Length: 338
Ligand SMILES: Cc1cc2nc3c(=O)[nH]c(=O)nc-3n(C[C@H](O)[C@H](O)[C@H](O)COP(=O)(O)O)c2cc1C
Image 1 (cartoon, protein in one colour):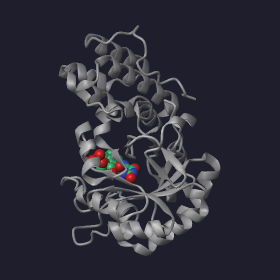
Image 2 (image 1 turned 135 degrees about the horizontal axis):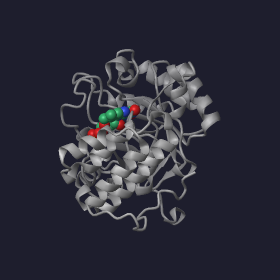
Image 3 (image 1 turned 180 degrees about the horizontal axis):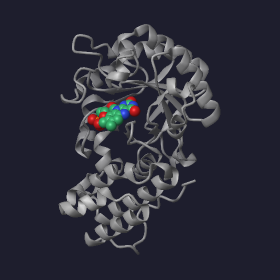
Image 4 (image 1 turned 90 degrees about the vertical axis):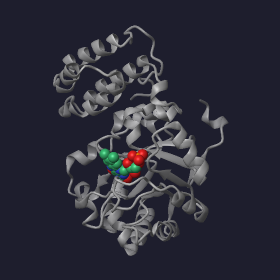
């Protein structure tokens, strides 16, 4: 696609974004391999798994692994998580110097008790001063646009997403992504979209809607109902990365599923050999879910530890479902893959 010939769907500061579906950042899921697959399938930009800047400042090596991305994956945002504005700003500057991301995103949504309890993630939403300081200092520390990802608020009595979005924007934020839940209704109640529309009407920077988009129809409905600029898809993307090319899972031929699974297994091992095949299992299970694989066969697939043996098992399983080895790549994931 010749992007120069198209007009962008939204601008994040001066950064043009082409497309309206984006993979949501997900700890343990939106790693470099999966993000690359979703970008190839149409996700408009990438956001890293959160970088805990407390750990980053203490030079924990695994945080650097989470910063890996391919040049062709740009635009790439690094997401920061912390409860300390100065530390986030210092780490943002170091990350910009070393990794050159296109954006810095501030996590104001993580609801895990250990995170929110110390005032990071959604815990930031209880501390407007921290929100003000974070956006002011981080935008001063880096040259790239800074964005926010937040929830509706801490609980039903404190929906302060409008006030905090305005505060973030006054202090330099160039986009707000809103997940239509509070900390308290972590994942158990349906996400509310009306508030996404409310925010869109109030802000003069782009708004991304997020929460419970499971199908193409959902994504279209969120865009229509809220007039948001783009939609972030989280959990549903694990089983259906093809949603980023506006396809529901039942529209995807087994050959394409096979090619993604095969690429992803190889790529994950190549990028992080020390983690072995284990992190791949959750995707494999999700990809195979629609095919009613016999329980014993599934168990063998999901307990295999050895990359070569698992590759063979994946091949055999998909061949038995009608995929073929020799068929041309429908999407060549290796192109741009440096
Ligand atoms: C396993 C998991 C990990 C997540 N990790 C992050 C994260 O690192 N940063 C973040 O901003 N949100 C994180 N989220 C929240 C998602 O980005 C998203 O806001 C949420 O899942 C709602 O979207 P969905 O209904 O499409 O899944 C995570 C969600 C899940 C399920």
